[in-house]
Length: 315
Image (cartoon, rainbow, N blue to C red; front, side, top):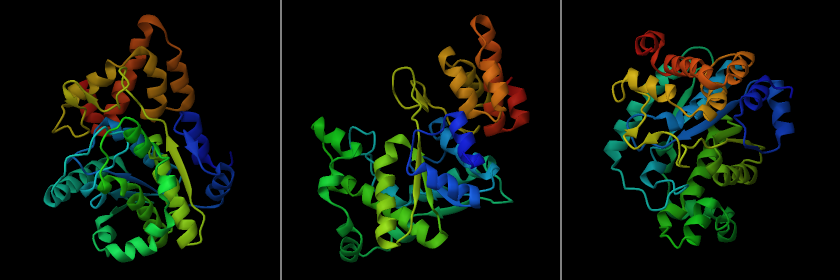
């Protein structure tokens, strides 16, 4: 690949699917672009389930591109049905606003704040002003029920005969509209997200083509799961929060120190800044020696999320 960003994305295992990778590679190699990831605002802090997306935004900055962090102040009022068996609990507007403040504080520690610094946007800025009739005419007319029923977020719930509200069914249209707005306002040409977001992101690309007459792209990353198949980020004891005020540095370090041996090679690439050759060398350790790799993994992840001083104290 010509693009250093895409090459490192691929080498580290961040890419699950990509639309038109050849043209995206060409675009990235010619100049700097803006790319975004959206974050739910269901809590006042992010947990390790969001860490891979944060690492991708950091990588984007490293290679000179500009990240857009989209807070779902509007979409959190609805709730993303992707990967859920039932409707999310309705969250009050005031709570969502407080959650955004907490999550923004997380990002201030995790992303560069000077050169090509992140743009922070809340989608309530446009979703909160929508006229329902106009939205149906101008945006809803570009979506077919036939196609919407094929996406996993809808199809799986229906196959299991689990309730899916009309409110949740609209979520994919709202996410597509987010991408359209960011493309229009900020010339954002790439959306990043987990593999469970593929259908929603592709809808946004189609909407941009139809309404803005522009080409946009998508990259999804693989979902990282626990040994039991559940999404990474939560344990029986609760969420592994990124903020030290909600989850101690010691316990955070220990979480990574105690990961399954089989996950160490993958986690060294995904969750640290270690050079590729060093990460691959550590990945080859076996037996008792794997514990040395786990110590390095735990230290490096804690250093990124909490700071070097906190990582040394935890160690």
